[in-house]
Structure formats: C-alpha cells, structure tokens
Length: 589
Ligand code: GTP
Ligand code: SPV
Ligand code: MN
Image 1 (cartoon, rainbow, N blue to C red):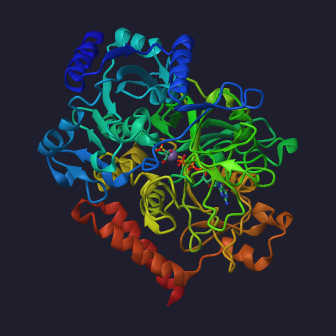
Image 2 (spheres, helix red, strand yellow):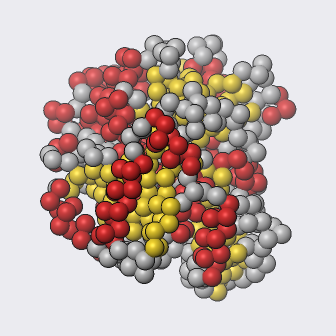
C-alpha cells in the first residue's frame, strides 16, 4: 500500500513539478518549522502570546473566502448519476480543462504529502486519505482537523486499507481557474485555485462527505453533515443526538451548548460538530463517530454568552482565518463580547473604524477558527470511542424566518426521511450563494452529497429498514423572526429546552405535553417551560403552531423541488408528499 502511495506521489510530482517534496509526520518539530515559514513569509501574524498562546491570524485571498459551490463538480460516466442538484463534469472535460492546470502548478513551491486518518485510531469505521498540497497553511489546518502522519501510515500498512488520493494546489487562486472535482468511482479528489476551508482541507467536505457518501451508499452506512452531542440528564444517563443543519446554521453552537440547567444535572457533551459517520452497530442500533479532530468554526456571533465553550477553546493553539485584529494583538469579530473597538485592522489588512459611514464588517462574515477538539471544555469522554456513540434522535434544522415551528417530531423514520429531504434554509456566508434566500437543502447535504440525491433518499429509507431501533427524527428551527425582523427564540443555551423534550420523545417517555398536528408532533409551550423566558403568548404561538396557509405554499415548494428528480424519486417519498398534502388540505378545507 505504501508503495502505491509513493507511486501516486511520484506521478503527481512529475506533473506539478515542485522544488521539493515533504512527507508530513505531524510532529511538533514539523509544525514549528511550518509556522516559522508562514511567519517569515508574512502569511501568518502571531497573536498576542499572553492572551492567545501559540495562535495565529491568516488572511486568505479576498476572492477566496468561502466554499464555491458553482465550481464544485462530480465526475461520472452518466450525468443522471449525479442528479439535478450537483454540477456534473465529464471525464473528458476533467482531463482537458482541469488536469492541465496542475501542470507545473507547484514550480518553486514545496509539495507536502499528508497521510491522514478520518476517525479514531482504533475504530473499524475510520478511513485513510492522502492529501498532496502546496500550501503550508493547509498542512497546519489538516493537522488540527485530522489525525496526520504515522497513525495513518500505520493503518495503511497494517490492514491494507483503501485510501483516498486528494490532490490540492493553490494554482493562481483565480476563481476562473478554480475547480473542486470528485471522482466517486476511483475515489479521487482534485482541487485547484482555492486555499480556503472545505475547498482545500480535502479531508472535510471532499472526502468525509462527497466521496464518503458514495462509499457509504455502496457499503451500507451513512456519511452526514451532522453534529453529534451527548445530552446528560439528572440521573446521569447520556442520550446521543445527531443534528444536520446547513452551513452556518448552528451545528457547532448546539454541539458545544452550555446548559443553563447544569446545576439541575442537565449538560451537553460534544462528540462532533460538523460531520458524522453512522454505522449499524452489532446491536442493530445506529452508532456515530466523528471523523475529525478539530473544529473549523464560524467566528462571528461567538461570544462568552452564546458559546462560552468555544470562547475557551479558541484562546490557545488556534489558527484564525479572516478575523479582525485588535491593536493589542488579539482577535476580534462581529458579535464578540464588549464594546466595538475604536480601531481595528480588518480582515483585508486595512485600518477600520466603526465610525466610518460605510463601515463594512471588520471580520469576514465567514471568518473562522481552526481549533483542536481537545481544547473544548465540554468534550465527551466518548469522542474517540472506536465504536462511536449510539444515536437516539436525529434533528434536521435550517434557517427559516417563518413556516417551520421551533421543533416538531416526525411520525416515524419514513416521514422523517421526507422531512429531511424537503428541508430548506436561508443561504449564509459559508458558501458563495445568495445570503438570505431560501433554498431546499436536503439533510443539509445539498452541496455535499456525492451522487443523485433521489438515490440518497432511497439509501436512507433502506438504512431505516436495517436499523432495529431507528432514532426518532425531528425538525428544528431556531430562526423564526418577529414583525421587527428579530429572532423570537433566544437560541444557544436555551435550545436545551428543546433537547430535553426531544429526549423525552425519543426515549418514548413522551408523556410530556405534545400535540399531534398535520406536519408532525409539536410540543406545547408548557413542555418547554417557556413561561420562564418572558416570550409573550402571541410569539410563543408563532413558534409552536402550524400556519396552514404558509404550509400550503411550503408543500407546493417541496413538490416543485421533488419533481426535479422524476422517476428516480423513491415511491415512499412520493407517498409521504401526498399524505402531507392531504393532512394539510383537511385543515384548510
Ligand atoms: P458550518 O461550520 O458552516 O457548518 O456552520 P454551523 O452549522 O456549525 O453553524 P455555527 O454553529 O457556527 O453557527 C453559525 C452562526 O449562527 C453563528 O453566527 C452563530 O452565532 C449563529 N447561531 C448558532 N446557533 C444559534 C441559535 O440558536 N440562535 C441564533 N439566533 N443564532 C445562532
Ligand atoms: C461548511 O460550509 O459546512 C463548513 C465550512 O463547515 S467548510 O469547511 O468550508 O466547508
Ligand atoms: Mn459544516
């Protein structure tokens, strides 16, 4: 296996023609050397050592600040195999339009070879990747986000595992020559022209979601864009819950939630905050591992009230990308604690003052921290359990200003799959999409499913038949707005109220107050003890009721979306669509 890796590295080097090749071992000495290199090239700015020990600020190219979905492609023989929601590229186009961009692309640069393992070292569910990159920043991020070096090479040598080759080059960073290309049949990734996030850290979205989703289809498991949390109740039991929310819709924050009811014994432990690999365990239940070892989290909005665990985590050993810099050499972003400073250096490196009329945000809205999972004070003691953790509930959630209640439970797995398949969310700064415009984002996998989404729903339905005790499925929406455009629900720590109800329902102790409605099972305000929050009855009703006029429009939107999949749509999804339509028309008739 190792020689197959060497062969591939040789072959890539013949095309990309780097000056030198460096095999990464993940050691502290290597990290130190690469950090010094980036400091000397002024790519890294060292932050105030007494506040943020061993932490750095990196500014990406201003045209390279988020995932670029329109430049992300899946290559298959037949276009219909990627479905209507993916960009398809022919093998011929990949060869003639993308491959030539790699010719000589590493001239004058070092080529880094990063062996990495996704998942705990001793888990049967973990998988190996090899990323070739010409970016030292990518290496340092991958080192936080995955298990790099010896642990991955050992895995290759010992069990002859398959590995996923991923080729990344910065190219000239021009969006005109930027492509992120996936070959599910050879399990290969090519990425050129971007050094940012999911475009460049190939273990994350390219491997752990797009390629892994096709492996999971073939091998009978699920690769999902999900957080994994453990909810501890006063009796000391921990219930594990997964949540699929689109990019920048609250996964990291929910996974790191600081409970307002900690002294009553209610607490949240983080297993993962972006990706879950789910397998049917020996007991027939669904078990989740977090393939990553770090958090590439959204900075804006993070403060000691919304996410104290994240604030503690990013205080040390953290790489910040595109945040603002305070005069005292510390990091700053919109929504941080305290007053807005009078002077900052913004994410572009320019002087910034809040008084200027045109003041744009000082930190980029998609600015991020890369921080090791072990920095999180709420890390679960099972986060590296080789078996994973057993999942009792799955949440689907998006950003919806109206229509979708705060929380409701589906009537079962099949209905739950329908709820996931039809979920929608307002666009965010995490991708180059229109911010605020609602789009369907099935299972939060719209940009990440490596094959035809209709087949993916079929796979979910098939998994439901294979799981003896399937998790209960819910939809949540923290983002309903009032008539002044303000969020009604306080969110963050207060989402604990929703988690407690979810747990009750999932464990079938659902004797709590709930109402069966047309769209699913909705808690009453009492079930959430919402009277403690001072939300008036009218707004509480908006959070927990079903507006059937809005739902008629919603179902029309769902039908229009599902129609795109034609005959490929599983019959069960069509059946659920009709059943929902009937339940709603019964109310409005
Ligand atoms: P990705 O890393 O892009 O996948 O995002 P994510 O799903 O992990 O989202 P994250 O938790 O980073 O939250 C994104 C933004 O939403 C941040 O600005 C948060 O402050 C904000 N946010 C998260 N949870 C809540 C909530 O419960 N209520 C409100 N109003 N905002 C929230
Ligand atoms: C997301 O967009 O879902 C992220 C950030 O988690 S990135 O790694 O860039 O994909
Ligand atoms: Mn994400």
